[in-house]
Length: 324
Image (cartoon, rainbow, N blue to C red):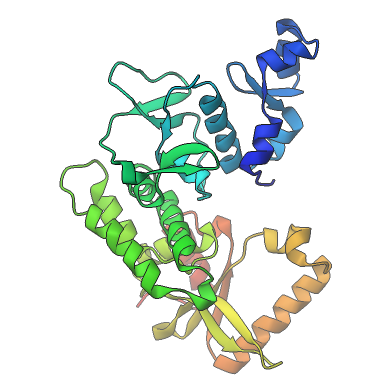
């Protein structure tokens, strides 16, 4: 699976009219969709079937956003919620939205099967052009998303946004990230909006040092289990004079956690030319050094262990790590 840029998706999307110009008929287009040669992104807009199958959910939803924007016929369309999130490059943890979310220009315009229209107040300062598409700005997007999606997806979005502001987690700009978080927290003091209580909890928990959604969701589950708030990207001196960074540190328990997504092992780009066997040997040597140097426990877990608090708690218990 892979991500695709807006420019790439714009080149891949083909309208019905463009397909007709190449000699296809409505019948042949229908057959191509039925056989998987083409995928219908929405009525009148298509993409190569094998390409669609290779895309992550974020890129698939971005393709829908672009198709809706292309069909706007000059009308002002402002994307919001998860649709604005994917345009800003934020993750959709275990979500595959089927409808594009837009702010309605007027109450006379209605939602359709693949477009959900929202009525909400919006100032000009909350609008941005992202890769040629009008969207809510980053702060408004995060605020809307963390109120409206499951908590696991919400924390992944909030962390990713703070990461965008704070930069490299190993040289994190606490001041800039703190200012952005404060703006979100102030907005979340509103009384009445649906999902506002979850928004407050997520904003309070958010940390831009998380590098992947798995780290974000893991922290949420640790919080639910009653663990102390962990440190992220904890430095440990390496044997060659460099530094190892461990995903999660629980200082009070003298324990580390490493969030092991499968991509570290199976994605050739992330292996940096190393074989799978070499990656495993390097990881073992690194882990042995960290444990031996710090005398802390170290637990590894993957996506399947972070799905629920119970699953993560059971995984940690195998390593003798339990909430106080």
